[in-house]
Amino acid sequence: MNTEMISGNHAGALAAVLAGRANRTGRGFCSGVYPITPSSESMEFLCQQDIHKGHVVRVESEQTAMGICIGASSTGARTFTTTSSNGLIYMVENAVAAALLRLPVVMMVGNRTIGPPWNIWADHGDSLMLRDSGWVQLYCGDNQEVFDSILAAFRLAEDPRVLLPVMVCQEGFILSHTMMPTAIPEQEQVDQFLPPLNLPHRLGSSPRTLGSFDTPHMTEVHRWQHHEAMASVWDVYRETQKSFLEVFGRSLPDPIIPYRAEDADLLIVSMGTIAETVNSVVDRARSRGLRLGSVRVRMLRPFPAELLSRVFSTVRRIAVIDRDISFGFGGVLWGEVRGFVQPGTIVQNFIAGIGGGDVRPEHIEEMVSDVFAREAASEPVFVGVGE
Image (tube, rainbow, N blue to C red):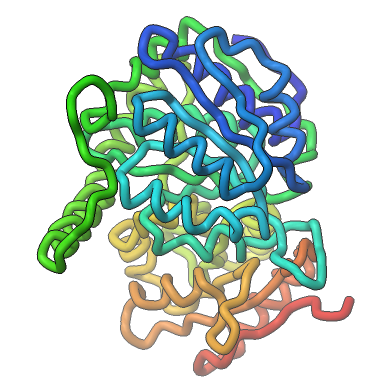
């Protein structure tokens, strides 16, 4: 195990390379790539690697990049791609197809604001547009988590009980271009963790149909099967965590990560890197006798309803920070979280960090004061607008 100072982009790409090499006794590795800021570094890194039994295919669009992954995955290859923002939007048709075809593609999304007007900084709006598409979604807090999540994503996606694509999300520039010490395992360890892919419905010498015409009843059955596969992610993820610890000697983060939440009078819920700032505010508040807690949602699909319900069972004030906006409604995370709280709980939504704006400790302290002063929740509150 070596420690390297690398960016989030390189961490994700390196994990994909190691995973691709681990399938050399299977049907190899394939990646379709098309550059877009802030994910281009990841593709450039991939293109420079020797993966032995594999190909990185440079294509003319994001839609084709996912098309390459669909074709390769359907023949049993381990597949990976990465994109951001409008590139993900252009990829949507094929991304949905990959999910409905039950192909274990892994994709790293460098979360970036959708344009126009054009903005290259962090925003969760791009990946959240696909939250109902059938992809498992993981949101990372640092570069080590990006690397580990890519490895875990292959193990999770390729499990015969799941067979769904997995999206690993990192915030553009905040993680994608920030250098952090990252523990990198040896190839032998990755080989031990990731057995060769054996896709049960792969195309090959035996006649099979992929993407045939469905009658209404057949579609109902397929959607039910897809939903059941998504529900099985919980058990498979726990098994993946156990294996990850045994092979690599460190823990894979849980689907939600509470911080000083057990006796909190107010919980602050967030995704991604904002949680680290929230935790620092929690520590300062605790030193003053104010009982704050934090919950970082790492896995958005499948949604961790039961886990959140347990954490929310004793708290009556919750602030939800969204780095996104569903126009005319509010934050996406807030919209999902508020259905799993106890009756009478105040759940206030705060929109912050849109378009890569700073979410500073003073912003979070303002949110805390706001929620403690409330008798009821209101429309979403925009924080830091125009600063």
